[in-house]
Amino acid sequence: MADKPLLGGLHGARAALQAHAGDVESMLYLESRQDARLEALLALAAQQGVACEAVRRDTLDKLAERAGLHAHQGVMLRLRRDVGGPRKNGLSAHLAGLDGPALVLVLDEVQDPHNLGACLRSAEAAGVDAVVTPRDNSVGLTATVRKVAAGAVETVPWFQVTNLVRSLQAMKSAGLWIHGAAGEGAATLYDTELSGSVALVMGAEGRGLRRLTRTQCDSLFRIPMRGSVESLNVSVATGVALFEARRQRSDHRR
Image (tube, rainbow, N blue to C red):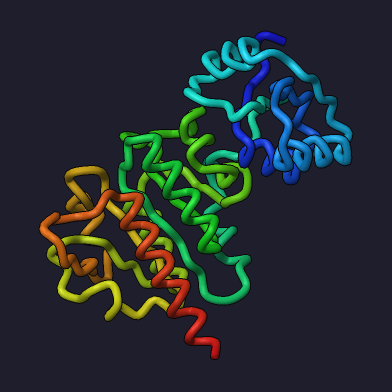
């Protein structure tokens, strides 16, 4: 039992119970917590046939520490195996099976787990069809990523690729336009056509897009800045770009 994977947080627990209930062994919750959100989660667990146990805070704190979490929100799941997370292959087949224009988020060597988790959360909220990250020099699935993603790890299609340049080339061959975020971009985000099949490529913290990644982009866009700061955090910029794409797609269907 000590080696069982753990998942903490209300959002992540709900997503796991909804999408992977068969992989959830049990749910532990804080005995002193009584509120509507927990009651709803307990009802979902009962509906899915998952055993629940009320425990003391120190028990949850120790489990959260073991999982690498700073907070558990009063809920921890014991899993039979890891659920969700990045897929090692199948990106081309996944894109080929989509109905309608594809919206893909590509993260070029994002290394901070909080940023990755926030990007995954925005991707899920914007209805992104796939998130693509390189396998090397990027943060992978961690407890912090799961927590910050608030359930997106369990639901959004996330692909970890060996060679990002080849993956971008394959996307272009499949009909996607590749648009990279860069401060020196010739066009603004709002002047970039995003209603068709597109991949938005966001660079790493600090250095932005790598040179080889830039060469695969059909265009570079910038987010107009009105204040004194020169750039946005990658997770904030990702949210802005994805929801501009979503706005254009909604307008296009009217």
